[in-house]
Image (cartoon, rainbow, N blue to C red; front, top):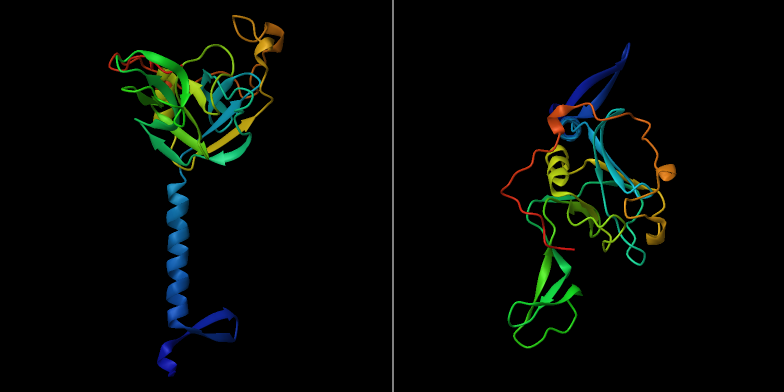
Length: 226
């Protein structure tokens, strides 16, 4: 290799090191790639999901932007705890496992069915809609769904649809999601949720940013899925 393939780089006074130009070019491309990744990670929000309080929080810095009641995974299908990053966003998502079974006349015969269950002649399996789906761990994600007032899902985190829309608009793929707390058993709930002495206010304060307050859109009906 001739000397034309090298560039002289000063590291310290009176010390010069020959650096392969191709190596220098590759290193520059690497730095530019890292800068690009850093720029893409500019979403200031994060999501924290408290299974004990059955509440999800949209947070920016140390300030609470929005909170939502949830219904997380019931016993046997508990929502996974841990620190994750948002993997996927999809407005019109359908479960590949769970749904309902209807007969030939369209009447629901199994309300909590999975795809492997036997379907009556002329009937069909209808997958559960999971609108405004935000996947954060394997099959678990946040989405619009029915909230009975206690943990009832197969592992996902259900939200009222208006609040699911607000969360969906704020987060991006890569947004940090932290899930923590012990899932209460159903008998710990009253018809009005957790008893007052079990409720705790989050340390980061109350909602302050009006831009992410949910706006009801009459085009979207309440999901039928229970």
